[in-house]
Structures are given as C-alpha cells and as structure tokens.
Amino acid sequence: MKPKAFATIAQKENFKTEFAAIVADNKTLSNNYSIQFFDTAAKSNYVFNGTNGKSINIMEHLSVEELEKYRQLKNNWQS
Image 1 (cartoon, rainbow, N blue to C red):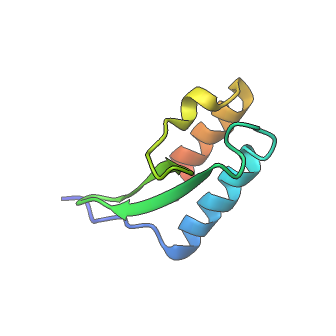
Image 2: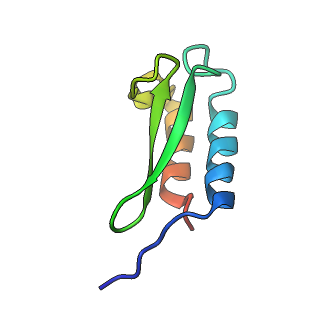
Image 3: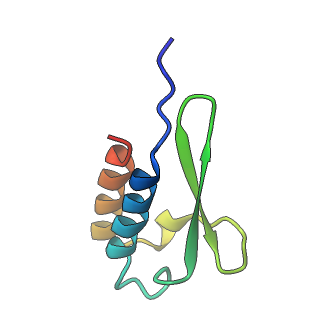
C-alpha cells in the first residue's frame, strides 16, 4: 500500500500564494474565495469556497491562461 502523502503547512501556504497570483487579475475570483484544506484517507485535498461560504467551481471562472496555470499548480502542489 502506498504511504499517505499529507501536505505540509508550507505546501498549503504556497498553494494559496500561487493560486492568488494566478487569479490576481480575475475580477470574479480575486479576493472572493477561500481555500479549505482537508486530509482524505490517501492524501491532502482542498475545496474553494465563495464569500457566502458555499463551495464554488473555480474552473468555470478561469481564463484559458489561468486554467493552464491552475492545472500545473494542482498537479504539482504536493511535490
């Protein structure tokens, strides 16, 4: 069985910082979301919440360029 790979505090903070840079010019998302991290049985994961506290699908609000940067961040944030 594969060992559990939980994200460190530094990895979580780095993810928040990098995501904020990706959406800095995005009028819909910039300063209108929060990121909540949680651990599953196998790894750490996260969810985006809007200012109303409900989860949001951020991908529908990202430009093509932002989406590509987010995908890279998503695939590498626990490396």
